Amino acid sequence: MECYTTCDELRAALAQQRARGRTIGLVPTMGALHEGHLSLVDASLRECDHTVVTIFVNPTQFGPQEDYGRYPRTLEEDLAALAARGAHTVFAPSTEEMYRPGHVTFVEMQGVALPLEGQRRPGHFRGVATIVLKLFTLVLPDRAYFGQKDYQQSLVVRRLVADLNLDVQIRLCPIVRDADGLALSSRNRYLSPQERRQALLLHQALQHVASRVAGGERNCQTLLSEIEALFAAAPGVRLDYASIADPETLAPLERIEGPAVCALAAFVGTTRLIDNTLLAPPQARA
Ligand code: AMP
Image (tube, rainbow, N blue to C red):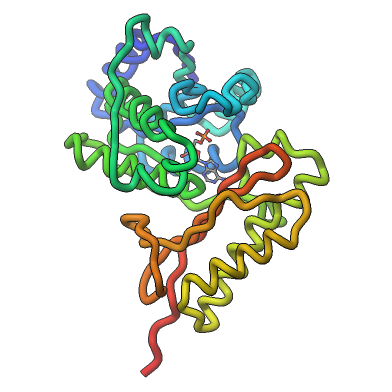
């Protein structure tokens, strides 16, 4: 496995791979890798000849009050995990390498970038879209791998690709969870043992909604009220938002008559976690 820290080295190495006719898979991450990230690496290794993993804690996608400064940085462990998995190339640039002095170009998006995370974290998707576009133009991947864990991010990236005519296939991989249901996240490291138990409520609330929909409930306001009641009754956890929305546009739904996504964000202590599930009503009976 090769590890590069400069754009020039990365471009030169990948040009050689491309010249040999190898397809390139890209897995963008912020490091502190866990099995969720590694599942994206596995998917790329299955589908592409050469897998590039990027590790970059992107400052432009964090708000001023957010956790950029204390975001976990575990490069040595990350490199060992990626080498064991069989990744081919790692790109771990410095902040100065990705944002040269005088950098003033950003990608602004409307539509799917506006609600939910976009509303709660102003500027977040501007930072995400900017770094993803930069990584796409550096790596020129055939396919890029994203997790359903950040469902809205995957929609933002698909929209970016469509709007800017980028020649890359976007692959969405399922959410990897711990055995008790908690979605793996680099931010789970912030949780105390007690908070770790309290954080299970995100998944439990999603499971509750999925089982109510499977049982025939269609009214989104009813379901959202039930989520709010579950959170109101739980100590240590504060719901930031709950949404049941169209899975393509993220427009809120009144009734679940077709595919839908239920997305949650909640604070567990001071740690903000997100989770989601795709919903589909059972086939209407004849
Ligand atoms: P991050 O390092 O948090 O920016 O995440 C990098 C990529 O890993 C994103 O595409 C995430 O959606 C994905 N990811 C993070 N957690 C999980 C998970 N539990 N299961 C699947 N993919 C994940």
